[in-house]
Each structure stands twice: as C-alpha cells, then as structure tokens.
Image (cartoon, rainbow, N blue to C red; front, side, top):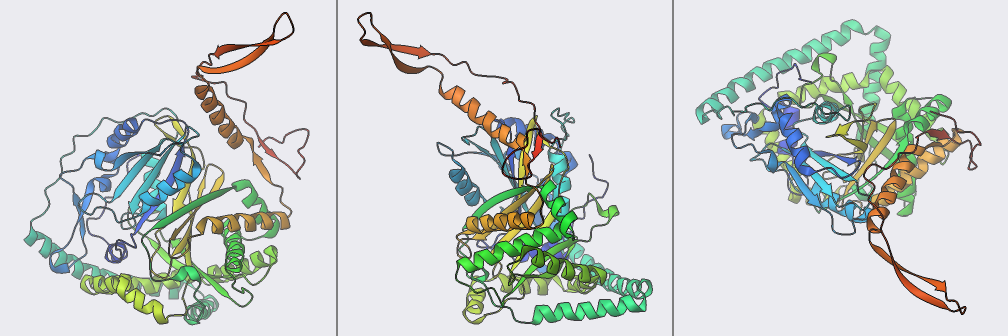
Length: 556
C-alpha cells in the first residue's frame, strides 16, 4: 500500500507549532497502545517493520532546523537511520500484572523524542502475565494527525494473519543540504507560503460567500459570533487545568462495544460523537463532584479536532485539522437530557458550518512568520511563564481535548498475531493537563485517558466515571448490554495456557488408605504437557436483555 502523495519537506505552520511548543514537561507526541495476542518475538516484528519502511519514507527522516529560524524546519533523510533505534524491546518486572503494565506504559510515554533521529518509537512490551504482547507507538504530532496516523498504522500492520513482505529496499539517504542552500530555500519557501496563505484565505472567503445562501450565511455569522462569545466568556478553571506540569504521565484506558453506542444513537438520536461527548460530560460531572466541586452552574468546554483532510489528501502526512470547541452540560443529572443538549449544540454548529468558519480564521495562522511563531509558541510553553500565569489565571477557554478517530473496521495483525485492542493517547500541556482519545477498531470503541501527575493523579478514576456514565446512558436509552463472548474466551484461553505451563512437573501429595485403614502419603508427579495449539472454542457474540442470560444466544 504505497501512498501517492509525495510528502512535503518543509513543515507547515501547524506542524511546526507542535515542535516550537514542546519541552521536557510537555512533549508533543501522540501514542497508540496495541495489545497483541500471544508472545510476539520483537526481532521478528522489527524485521517486518524495517521491510515496510519504503512505504513510509517520513519514518526514515529527521528534522533539520532552518538557519537563523528564517523558515520552518524540513524533513531530510537520516544518513544514520537504524530500525533498532526505534523498535525497542522492554520486559515487565515479574509477575507482569496489569498495574505493573500501566506504570511501565506511563513511564515510556514521558519525555521528548530524540530530534537527532526520526521522531517515532515502537516499544515491544513483553512479560505480561496473560502471555500477550503489547506495542506502544509514539509518533510526533508534527508528523501525523489522527487520520494520517491510522493510514500509517494500516501500512505497518497487516489485514490478515499471512504477512507478505516486500523485498527490503536498498535505502541510501540523500545528503542533507548545505547550510547556504537551507537558508535560501527557507527564505523563498516562507515568501511562497505567505503568498499562498493569503490567496487561500481569499479563495475560501469567496467560496463561502458564493455557495452559501443569504440565510445560511446569516446563520454562519450568528453561530460564529456565538462561538467566539462562548470562548471569551469566562469559565472556571478545574483542578486538571494547572499550568505547572510535572512531566510525569499517568495513562489509563477502557472500551465499550460499538453495538451499544450504535443502539444509543438509534434510540436517543444524535451521532456517535454526540453519544461519546455525552458520556464524557457525565463522567466529568462525577469526577468534579468527587473533588467537591458543585457542577450545577459550571461550564465544561471540550476542544474537538475536526479533520479537514479531503479524499485527495488521503495518504499525506502532517496535520489537516481545525478545532471545534463544544460546551457540554454537566449540571443535569439526566443522561438523556445531557445527550439532547449535546445534540442541539453540535447540530447548530454543523448547520452553520462553524468548522469552516474556524478554518477560515486559522488559515491566517499560517501567515505568521516562522520567527514570530517560534517565539510565540516558546513563550506559551515556557514553564516560568506558565507558572506566573497559573498564579492569577482563574478561567479557561477550554478545559480538555477529546478526539475521535475511526480506525480499521476489521481485525489487524502483527506478524501473524492478532491485534486484540488499540488504545489512543494524546499529548497534554499547560492548562490542558487531562485528555481523552477515542478510537474505533474492530467493532469496539476504545478510550485512552492521559494526564500529567500534577493535573490528575487519579486519571484512572476519571476513566471509571466515564465508563459508569456511558452505562447509565445506555440503560436510560433502554439499550441492552452487548456481551461479546470472544473477549472472555481470549482471557480464559490465556489463563488456561499459563496455568498449563506453570503446572509442568508440579508435585502434589495425596493419601491412600492402608490395609489397616490408616492413610499413607505418596509423592506423585503430574506431568502437564504444554499445549502448543489448544482447541479454540467456537466464538459467538451474545446480547442479553437483562442480568439473566437467554436460553438461546443471539448471534452477532
């Protein structure tokens, strides 16, 4: 699967902003956590990924800054590229519990990626007590947005257990341009981008004026004014909106069946995104109340990235998104009423094409000169400046970021091993110390929660509250719980295989009666053969109307 679009060398202003705005306490990489069925050899996956590097050349390129900052950095071939620097094996301490796994994943997520190398890593995590393997992907946000990260994931993995690898290409890195050439390129590229940005802004404005009727244009202007008014209106800062970050990360995760989400949408209305935002609002209400905050008069604003990637831009890298702020009601205790209010708000924004209006204004963002943008983002991410701001700032324009990315509908495989789960994670920063990623994979919705330790040390509890709020919304909509037996069988299968291995050569004592009636003790060794290919139970998906199961399962 080779992409048709030739990747651009120079970062766009949006991509470069992620570089300029990061520091050790606020790294700007996104992450994905795959749980892989069985024990996958790291070396085998490393060779597999190395052979596919020819399809994703960006992953063999490093950042080269422009002289004197006259232009944004460029992507250039890394002459010292070595796949071993990026695919790294990690083993959990024994016994490899879920808590040990969570701590290890959180620690691996910390810190910035090495800018002297291509900005990505894949940690192969072994030693889980369920005998499964994990892959933690870290990719800098300057390289990909949510949609392009999925396309790259589909290249790195396979859609079937049989992996047919291409011949490994003979990679020869192009030499990094000389300093004088980098400088001249930066000057002319910046001038060209300034001209193109101004032209793009005018084209978008003319297009909207011509293609929107007067009534819809009035609605757009009204909603845009309302949107910016809402952002400007002060909203109380929550505990996780601290600007003093520790740099320590805490990760948690969860999932719900896609069938339940679809059932809620059908019975209560709205879109899948609306249902997720309503569950997030319910979870946030519980979380804030657990911290003693009265939610009845609070405003909760979520920044939702909206992809602007066209069909022609599929396969291209970088960021093609705009941000749509959505205010979610958390004062109401009724989950259906909360969903109805979310639907009303998002429907008005879509009808008014608010995302297009915001994109029109963010187009001007790209006209900011690289030197100015670097200075602005550097100050915005400075720990000293953020510490000073945190001392007197009591409001927040948005409280957190939540992104929803559609992933592969069917199962994916890593060198023949099925990818059981995929959890997404976003970067967090000053004032936005808690984030939630949403990813659809193989008929399931996966939630990834991440927080700085100073912002939300109890992020795992926040995830539990979101899960509870989702269940309450499902029950209120009278949607039956969806039970997928295959996930339970996977867990049972892993435990059975682990127990069989642990019992090899296990000695037990038993008593047999003597002729006189007394018992005598014998030492008996039971040999338990390792099951190489255990029989798999036929998998079904079953739906239960209540806590008591039906006599007959309903196949999916």
